[in-house]
Amino acid sequence: MIARLQRMMLLCGALLMAGAWAWWWPQSPWALAAFLLGLLALNPLALGLEFMLMAWVNRRDPAPRASWRQVLRAWVTEVRASSRVFGIWQPFQADALGDRLPHDGQPGQRGVLLIHGYFCNRGVWTPWVQHFTAAGRPFMALSLEPPFGSIDTYAAQVERAVTVLTETTGRAPIIVAHSMGGLVVRAWWRARAGAGQAARVHHVITLGTPHQGTWLARWAHTVNGRQMRLASPWLQALAAQEPPQRAAAFSCFYSNCDNIVFPAHTATLPGAQAHFVPGVPHVALVTDPGVRAQVLSLLSALDAKNNG
Image (cartoon, rainbow, N blue to C red; front, side, top):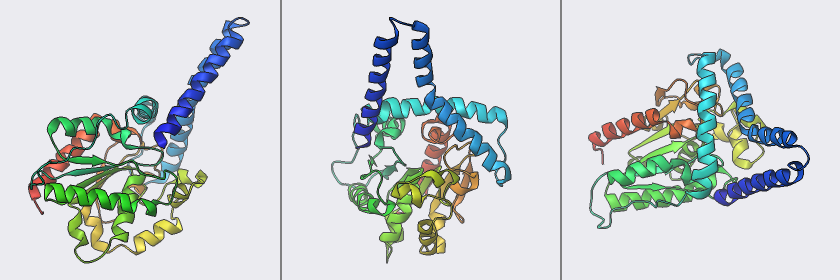
């Protein structure tokens, strides 16, 4: 659904530009140029506003404060990353590469489950999917449906994927989740709580997940968007129903230039391992090669523990 929606948005933009060309070109090429430049500037301007709000809100955050040079660099990085993700990967390449699973069902390398965030699909993981496919590592990447429902509704999809990865590899998988995806994992774990559930997952790595909510979600009006507001009733209930030891199974990557999840510390989970990556914006937490290298290094270290 997200792929179709984003293709429709791109088509509407293309039709608007074509209509403007047909209307203004014979009359005023300069007016046409100004209109087209303004249209192309909408995304950078919207992202710029997010970064200004982020910098203002992060003034009193315990994370190291980003310099304006870092913020400017992060803005440019996010414009590029969001253009690739929302303009190419998600609308057109989400299913270009499928999941990779062992065919013989024999125990082998531990699998990885990739879970995307809000208004995204599995296409956001394109570089990761390419890497795991080339490396021969078992993985599954979900496209959560419905895109704007309650976070709790995604538990069944996570359950099926965890079951498949466990049965085909003989090992509990590692989950890598971006943004809202980390909350999806926690909601699934809560729904499946019970004897032996801790062994279902080897470890969970979150990238820019609003574990404690995000300031920006105050303007969200979808069900899952409201659930991600700072100290929302849903987040408070989730935290209250989790055993304290569960956080030890999480590693949280967070940034002082995350333009979606801020204040910066809200992307950490109390009791979890925190990995600070300075200067990296929200979507780029998935696309940045440096962050990906750190996560892959952590995956290798987790593999070596071989906890079953």
